[in-house]
Image 1 (cartoon, rainbow, N blue to C red):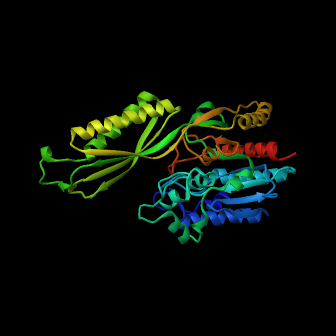
Image 2 (image 1 turned 90 degrees about the vertical axis):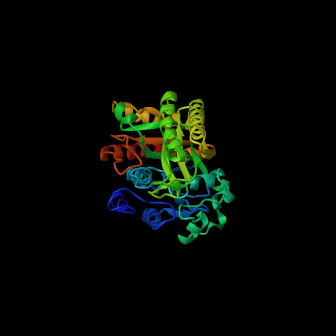
Image 3 (image 1 turned 30 degrees about the horizontal axis):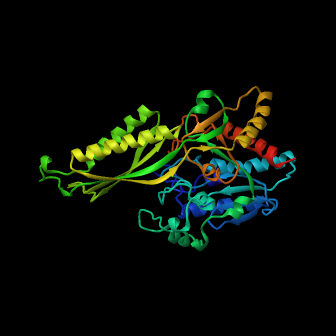
Length: 403
């Protein structure tokens, strides 16, 4: 499975992945998922929001155990973020069949669409729509860098966007959702464990800073006469790093748009997007408030106007305690017999599991990332650790869905 999926959307020069929502690469990933489902005799479904489902047992029976992740990527992303969870889900089902497991509940494997938000700027679109966290009207307003709207992109890819929106009936079928994911950090590498259980997802959000100045000639305008928005933007980037350090948070300006974007022109507008996350709400609030204060002070000093817009926000997500404890019990029993441990750890990365947590009992498994690098072609995981993840997921699914 890994070899078949690996070439899809891989850029020949960067070796990173460009599997953006509703593009040709995304379509190829979806075809791969459908083929995997059908080759195993599973019932394939495409829901109203473009999420894919592969069912073992009656989809209408209720109390289903669901696993999976996503197949799309950030620009030049790594091979493991998302796909490891989907591949491992199919592999775990194969393992359970080899064990002769008898299922007492329906099992489903899913691929949620547009998890990364690389094209339309909002993460977890598929799961947000399904859970009612994103309205149809809000989804229709999403556009990519070329001005193409989300519904138009769906239509181009052969999907009907008319029915997108909350899907409570589908969520009511789910008794538990388990997402396996490569760890996006080094906690497991530092602890020496191959697999861990997630405790919570840090609160996180995205804010857009618009610095508006005055376009002018780069060669003839005196420095003293300039209203250059790039200067307060640059100072704000540095301030974000310092304020995050002081609060024990993280803050990143990773995307920028400049107008008129000419080498010999002073910009009229610099638009930067801030991503900030912290272990608790108070630390996040202090970080973003301090960054905004710095931005306004720097803008005033240069005669620049600045506007701040919060584009998305997700509060802290505590995964279902009873389900998390059950995973710990299942895996702890197996680990104890092998003299291993299964640590419980938090994460600063958002996931579909975090979106669904308000609607269904949800838990996550992490697989060790030896460098902690993610959202990069350098993202990696050892084959032995990936196999340990498959076995752990199979153990969990067996404990939840089988006799």
